[in-house]
Length: 275
Image (cartoon, rainbow, N blue to C red):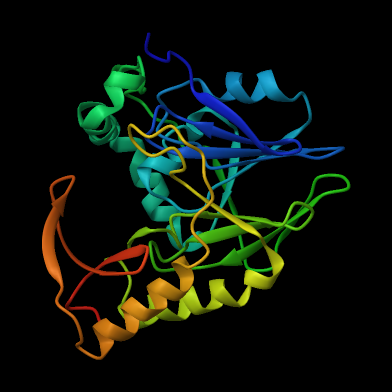
């Protein structure tokens, strides 16, 4: 029997990963006084109802970046923190209901429908954009005996941010540092600087949960391999030094160029190597 509701996994005390039918992962962090929701997914499920089932604490909503699979469910909420460099991208999602449905359907046809019972038609035709609040480097969300610090890590998008849960030593990295990094919107040198910055934080966290834990037809909710930052840095240097052999492929209808090393893959724009 297929799974009819988002999968919820408590990955640490009062820390919930919400798997939206394999299309995206959101995270709910609950403190003594407040709760923080990181990302809003595609909008396939009633995310507010899911959150309400887990906590009755006052809620703050924030997004790692402005792509449609991370802010598609933002209409459930009155306001959302997101880096200002991604504001226009976020606002444009209001007119992308059909594109989000196609994205969600592609995951289903790739094996998701064998595990999950969901319909992309649940996504609203009219995606509301809440009040956007600025998210910046060094910003802290005080949840009550639990603090979460923000770090700007561009590359996947210009305004990409990661959230460090100091108490549980977990970083929530969105799509900025994972085994399959898509970074055609920024130069390779900018991506390299961002990953080096991410690596510099490694002494402050033990686990890295990204925005697609439980990706596609694989419902496992796992931290990213510890070698990923080093592997991505190696790839960036190979690209900039014209080493290795890149290959071309298509993802969701978009042509991409990719290099691999170790546990990681990096997709980039070959015409945007330097700043």
